[in-house]
Image 1 (cartoon, rainbow, N blue to C red):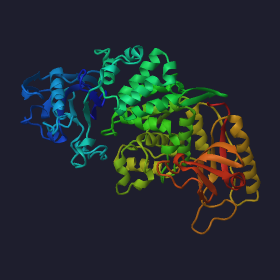
Image 2 (image 1 turned 180 degrees about the horizontal axis):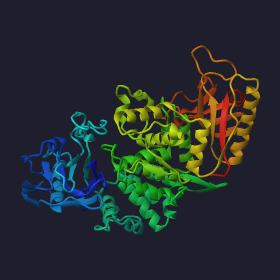
Image 3 (image 1 turned 180 degrees about the vertical axis):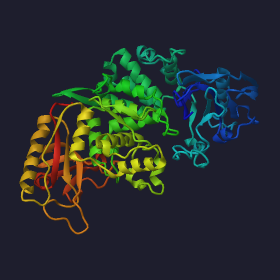
Image 4 (image 1 turned 120 degrees about the vertical axis):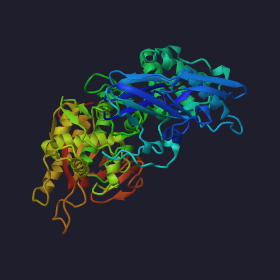
Length: 588
């Protein structure tokens, strides 16, 4: 059958509202069974436990009595049910009597001391049997019920149990709710109503948000971020429908809720001295805004290699890059400086287009149509991080600090740009490792860079001359190239991709055992006799230097290491520049 996944629409569900809703996806139709448990161990060992609610199976149902928080018996009677996938999907809601029982049990955890061992977390699992099949596909696998993001390359996808914190296994949380009566009226009822819901629960999202607003304590971080959204001046300028979408993004993306007010404050360039809220920036293809594309990312069939990754985690990965591409996007020790710089350039110029591409690459389709109509496919196995530390694989440090969105972009970019030179995929483990190693080891030559730039942005790019090494014309060509960069930056009003020689200076023969090296950076501005640029060699979270410090070969200064901003003196650039690219048409 291949794969199956189950995801809650919201990872932390308010206990005072409707029951949680899950979506089940697979690459085939079939009959699904959902299991819920207080802890991963109960999912690994299904049984009838003394605590009635510790384990539940949708096929069997549950029947019995439990003690209420304030005394007295509560009867729980939920018959077994049949869950059928249509069009490879099914929506499943926790039966209301069962949810009410979980909420009642959660109240016991607020006592001092707690009168229940329930942690207010519900761990979940799904199995799907395809039509005519006898074997069910199960997710998450046994080894993932102890730790998040444990991945093994196929065909071995079982048998390794990680004993790390159970909190890492897929689960939903039950929010403990309380708030003062004065704060129960939501500030923008029209926007909340516009949030909508799902087909058979058309007001689900608005109902949940109203519950959160009216019940969460006023000092709760989530409620504070929601209050900041309601109060944001840019939010107030949006239409009712757009405000409803912003609230839906806040609700469905709990890991980035604190970032939504920041996102509302960001502006994007749409023309000479013209700006628009970044959430309204339109992708280069398809006509959708960043806001609508982030919501679409929350609905994709997740790529099967992302073993226990949730949609909200994917959105968090992508949105963190949108908000701070130079602080997070990096090449590590890999040779992918050109595609990494182009990735930063795309995020800077058009974050909506970047998210649109990630929707394709991070989904089960594993491919995306570029702005010029070409298709860029993800190399098989590139998202399986466990390969990085295996014998015969590149060193794990090559991808240190990378997330799945970075891997997807840089892997697809290398494969697309190299064309027929990229290793063939024969479907076996040997070819998967060969493709992975190729992505790790290779960057882009100028002709490959031009191909990728023109496909990504849908316009023609002009490449400069390439400065030769150790030749009579090296100095004069480099001086002309530097002058070209200085003139193009203000004229084009956008970042430029610039390559310099790196490590070994180009004006003399390389020392014994050394070779000339090149490195691509993203040039941002030219002022005060210096070129300021972003260096993709490292992430801002792990800076290579300190502000005001210097580095050599080429000589450069760390201006803001946390955002990978560096600068180089004009005179030094004239000695080290390699080549650069400019768009023939504005791409802002």
